[in-house]
Length: 469
Image 1 (cartoon, one colour):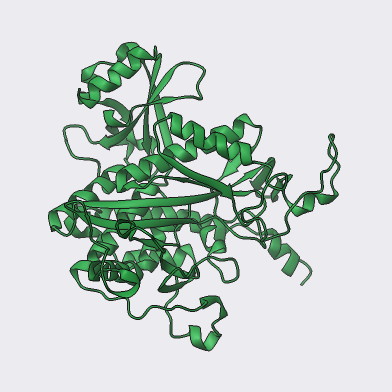
Image 2: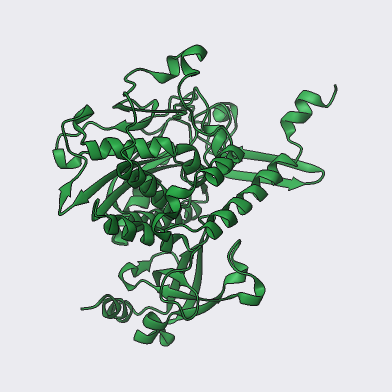
């Protein structure tokens, strides 16, 4: 049975009333458009539906706004959150009269990256396993205006809550800053919520693996099975949607913002990666940490282009408040086996087919399609040009002196620096017309608007430092 017939059968068996056409914009935000089930037949899948591309940030001008959402029937899933029976389908964005994906559509870019990989003959499959971290708060308030700028976060798990009065009493069970890793209930107050997130994912057909409390109070991690670049990104979007809605159902608020809390760990998204060909793991070998030459060159490409990659893997001004020494975030462009202070880690595995690398600098606010596609393109460039990453650094990089660090390359220190690096180091992304100059220029312009918005807004810390000067 074709994917289209399976999707139509799923609708019929589950008495679906609405079909959600979902797509991702350049910022990584998920959008949806609902269609009544009575309008859905095979032609809706083959012809797609029209939408206004000028209303999507950085996509189309108003005089050239017509676009088409092309549903990928293989992604059809039942959505448990709407009150009406709803089926969700992930879509690619196309321009009218064109059969290929729109140049700025992130999912289409990820598809082109996979197609380019196959065309090079280097590999036929790339697997990605993201590990997104996130915070769940009880109450979040913020305001940004010309005369009032603030945010206020309430979290029952936070140490600051030890002295608060609660209607049901204060349990007193809380972890200090940076001591929340793997804590158990009652300190871990959201064990059941994380389990529910995994259960909902599983019910929606996504293979799940684990969940646990993370280092910071109110910080969590959920793990699901690896997949291809497009599949892993699809599942990451679904996971974020589920997490936010499950938290909302508990009367709480989930955020994937990398650094919402000062003085504690931020949220990263370590991404495990490997290349395969003819069902053989190309990263297995006899070099360092039992890696192959192919894997070493892949690492070389990641590290060589890391500053440009930061524009996609760490695409917010807030991302660089996480990428600072002292909070377990990788800031040094080095690789090592089992060393979590390095930008690229080679995890220990018991099964050779599990051989992979782990890129540790991305964070979960990244557009998952652009994140996976850009890293794949950097790794392939490393293989094509035999970029060796140099010697591994099997030491705690956090303990190095300023003099020792001076000769070691580091990550971009700001979104501005990352955007300059992307502008100057873009050729590896243009290979095979995976990314385009128009898309990169548009992306840089969109992100510079964010940089300028932050740079031009007075910050409360500035009042503390300068008001009485």
